Image 1 (spheres, each protein chain N blue to C red):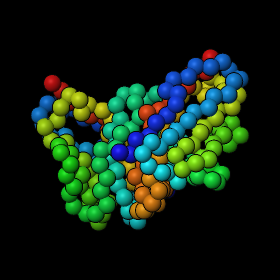
Image 2: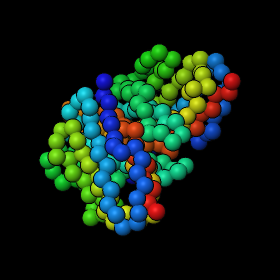
Image 3: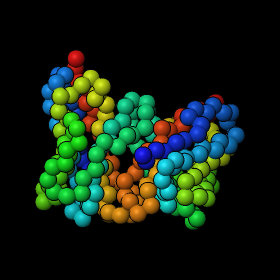
Image 4: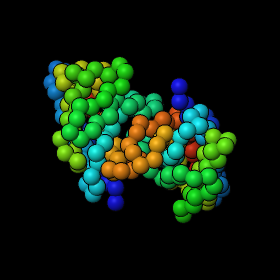
Amino acid sequence: QKEVEQNSGPLSVPEGAIASLNCTYSDRGSQSFFWYRQYSGKSPELIMFIYSNGDKEDGRFTAQLNKASQYVSLLIRDSQPSDSATYLCAVNPARGSARQLTFGSGTQLTVLP
Amino acid sequence: GAVVSQHPSWVICKSGTSVKIECRSLDFQATTMFWYRQFPKQSLMLMATSNEGSKATYEQGVEKDKFLINHASLTLSTLTVTSAHPEDSSFYICSATPTGRETQYFGPGTRLLVL
């Protein structure tokens, strides 16, 4: 059974700090990896996707992927109270085709003013 | 880009009635769309995978005769909850994947309350 595990949280960080969110996955053949943000009462919103080992930066967000360790993380620099949400890690077994995502249970992040 | 809309955003209905929810990809074509349900404080639960022009694939435990899915075009999929009951009250969310891609973009969701 394919599994995606996230650190349970809740995670609290002070405003301006770096928030680090972690995720491990069981299917070694996984090809594409996603981070979604879900505010309470809202639907998930795509933050980033990553396919290759290493880091990918987009503004204050950096996704890191290590396929050998089956590990993907999301760093949020200069955290803001508006970043307070649940962050979902999702894994797709393929690239270039729509397949069912396997989601982690999410990590709830609170950024304290 | 990659905007997905859902309509309606809120629906309240009486037990026994049917409710149709539309999911549209506004600026891309989506061969595949997905329907999820989420109960309060719980994770997303995939209900079905919808492919344009073919029958939907339902997850185990999801009644296909109760949750009718039609994906008649590359930009529109509909979910009809037939003979809705209070236990069907939930947050229904669709996602769409641009043809040839693997990224899922979510709609804003539809809250269904069955009285």
